[in-house]
Length: 115
Image (cartoon, rainbow, N blue to C red; front, side, top):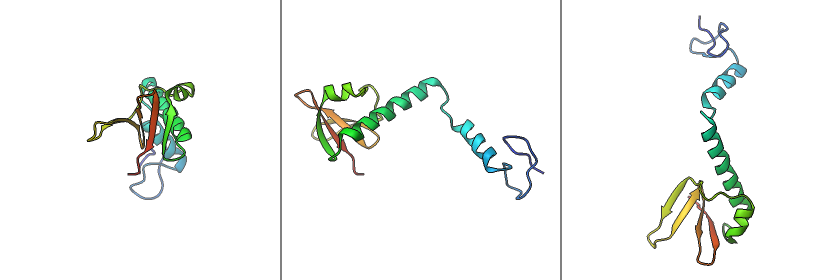
């Protein structure tokens, strides 16, 4: 007879069960999947905040906004998920599916990637 991986109780039922109930399964998986340290948690929080700000200011799918407005909302330009350089030389920093690039007049162009 198997024991629950979370609480150690004996498991009744199928031979391949690993947990005695949903609560133990959830607790075990939450422990396995939590951010491993404060650094990761802080970076993920900054990425989430940046993403939220971009979704709030980019209502049209493609928006031009003053860089100062993003800074005022708490946007942190050091945190993004990937960098794309297009054939025409345009460099966009992306946070998941939202990208932005600096324009000449201290404005930012924000786009939503459709793919």
